[in-house]
Image 1 (cartoon, rainbow, N blue to C red):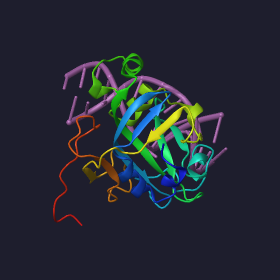
Image 2 (image 1 turned 90 degrees about the vertical axis):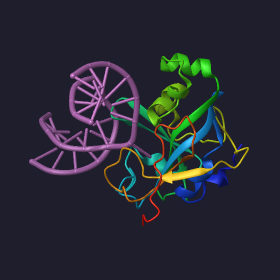
Image 3 (image 1 turned 120 degrees about the horizontal axis):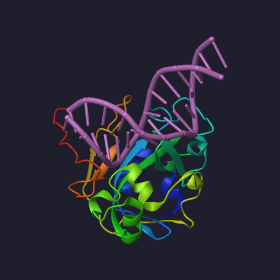
Length: 192
DNA sequence: GGTATGATTGACT
DNA sequence: GTCAATCATACCA
């Protein structure tokens, strides 16, 4: 189980180190293979304009969940980071399913392991994450997060689906994993 | 009270 | 490749 202090650091640091950790909700989950970081100074972040009823969890203590509705259809799961009040969080974008695969398949309506948790909306559907998890602590049931067993090769790249803050390359993933929501483009060597 | 928008997905051409 | 679904939230009047 990761200590709450793990999350009391900059979101980008936490996002990169979460790759390879195992996340389960009620025993259903898998290895984290893709994350994105957001913070209070980031124009792409929900927290950039200060606290609102929706994003209040982002301004709470680190090591808690922030769950929000996306496009009126999907849920997205975040881990709150940095010192309390900074509005920083890590979006969990994809898992490699390892536990409770039958439950995931039932919720998702597919047996294809690559479509169970590849994407923030799919991941929350597979793990049955919803509004009730918003603000919950991550070091107690139903959540369980355990450290990475090995040191994966972590790739970084441009975040997906945002229109602002695109110059901040805070998408992180397990390089070469078959369970990413999208593959990582090779960053050009001359890119600033 | 009205309207524009989105950290997405899945279906379709 | 394009596009609709669908609604809570945020913002303006």
